[in-house]
Length: 420
Image 1 (cartoon, rainbow, N blue to C red):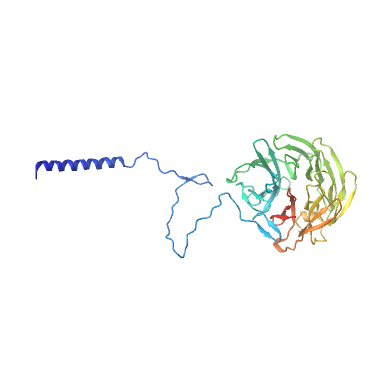
Image 2: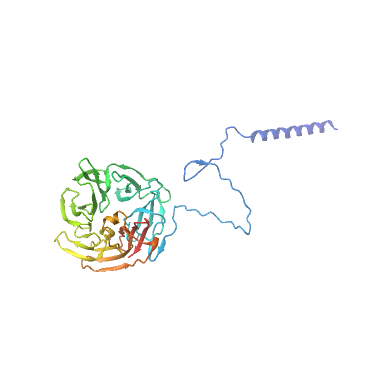
């Protein structure tokens, strides 16, 4: 072979070998190279490995379909039964109607799920039902709701009470930012309030303050707390420990010693500014009462007899035709009209309100509207439901438009809405 040709071939082979070596060196794995970033789960925040996908060839027998997701934590649509709308699919401890931003915005409420203690938001017709918080606050028996407002935020204040220990219940105070994004679950942040009496809380009409009764060595003391500033003032003391409290009017806290069919009861008005205590009505057995927003009318009953309207201004009393417990009623915004859940066929041999409070009797209610200025009463919903759909309504709320009545069934803890 020509010597020059042999040398040329050798040079070409050498050049190819060097090029291959350089390419191998450049593309070799590096000890300091960064692996692919792990995926973060939106639920836990912990990194996890990329998912493994097992590809399955599509067939005519098993059509492929995309996985449905719920990006904003929406619940299934509401259930409608005989004109009633079931607003929540699970049991509820309490609910609050939020102030409307304008006359064109829909009415919205927030409720506390019984089993988990999570907050949910829904419209009063049950649409857009959505989880807001992820918490562990089970076993709550009573709830009260306030709002702390400032220029930046509106904060919903939840006062929740567990009655596992009747002598000393646990009371939790939590806060939720109403302007928080509705697409991310948040924690309900709060702390325990010591020594609060069972059921001994009432929130002011504009929801910026609350009154609470706390156990003391000599009885109880009543304190008013400002939700925005946290300032407190003691405005009431008593040797009697068992009271029913409400805050119907800006200047009136209503106090009644816990009623019994065998013990006479009395209604007092407490001024939250001065601490002045005024006796209004009393010495009646089985006495319970519900005061309107202006303090000008008192709905009261004795046991389960026909209700009456008392006027603190002139001392006059008007008898009504419906027989129920005042706590199964709600005043409309005009402070004249009442909406009441009235038992269809109550047990006649029971002692009221004692046996109903103890859970020894249950009701199946229809709903009535009452004009307290004339005494006229008309039925607005006849309840023919039976079995598990019976209704024993408590915690009645009337929305701002006066078109929907919201309540909780005492025995199933279901949250219902009724168009009125």
